[in-house]
Amino acid sequence: LGGPDLSNTIEVNGMYITHHLLSITGEFTPQPVEYDGKYFLLMGEIYNYDDSWPSDIYFGIEKYLEHGDSFVDYLDGEFLFIIVDGDNIDFFTDPWSTRQCYFTVEDDYWYFTTLRISKESKRFLHNSHYRFNTKSGEIIQVNSELVSWNLDQNIDTLDEVVDAFKEAVIKRWTPNCTLFLSGGVDSSAVALCLYENNLPFNSISLLTNPEFEDQEPLIAMTNFCTNHFIVDRITRDYPYMDNAQAEIRNQTKKQFSSRVVLMGNGADEFIDNYRSKYEKTDWEYWPEDLHNFFPTRHFYFGQSRRLLDFHESINLNFGLEGRNIFYDKKLVQCWLNVSAPLKNKERKGFLKDYLRKYQIPISKTPTAGFGQQNVIPSKGGWNNFYKYIEFL
Image (cartoon, rainbow, N blue to C red; front, side, top):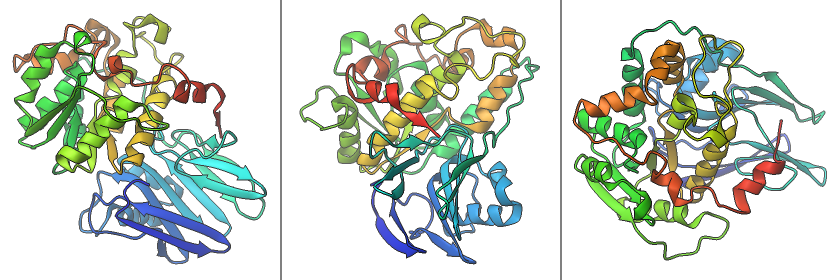
């Protein structure tokens, strides 16, 4: 449901459109928004919107009216943007499709849904523009590369990456948000950035298996939090969800009444690429030339796809908006442009350097954190799901 603060259903040319609003930015805005005979829907968040508008969806509409299908070049966020225009429905995903969309045909009816509703559902790909014609029933991928990446590795300093990281954190902050804090490098750096910029935040940690966790960094980081809560046992059973991850969301709502959770996933996928976990990667060092190497295994698919969809599905069930710090267009581009020798000098080097400046201890068990606590069910559930999912 993703909330709801407000639910709205309308009929347009024989189509039923239902939207459940989780309102974070601006005024409550029932969706879809109608303008000049077109209907617009936004799932997720646009971070660079002009706050003279009552809501960020209007900023997206403005950019669409100005630039047409290339309007996503002017959007910075985590989003799925939908435009219903007569017989055509256009779908625009962000670079990683952080907000899910599935297409299903059953009994001569077609459905587009946020969550997967059957084994026949097909998922939209990342970084794409799709168009569906309601008369013909045909769906086409209009553009498979809305964002193109510059693969030149010609920057011999980490300054731009650090600045982009801080910007990615700050733009995702909102009052009373909660950080999923493991004590690992990724979430610790996020906590430090929030503290450094005087942005109060809650944090929640999962310690059901404390023997796996290096607690010294975690304890150090809790001094920076406005409020901190530890989930040390799971007392409820959550059907169709990983119990530990569901309990984190449950306690986030119960302890803090938060609506936004900040998540450090993405650093392993983009910056480190699991090079310390050989079963998850095919390479050890960044090469001098990325052009025949990119995208890497986990850039769009692999753990990126698995974890984004996994966390997004649970967040929606609890009426939370997940904001993924490292799935940031500017940050990822800055990292890609860093020279290969500097990338290979130390894994997650710029995050560790940032922590060292404040004498924050670096976790000695980097494979622990939330990942050690059974993020992905060991059998059934999402592991099996990815054996047969089809992409459009």
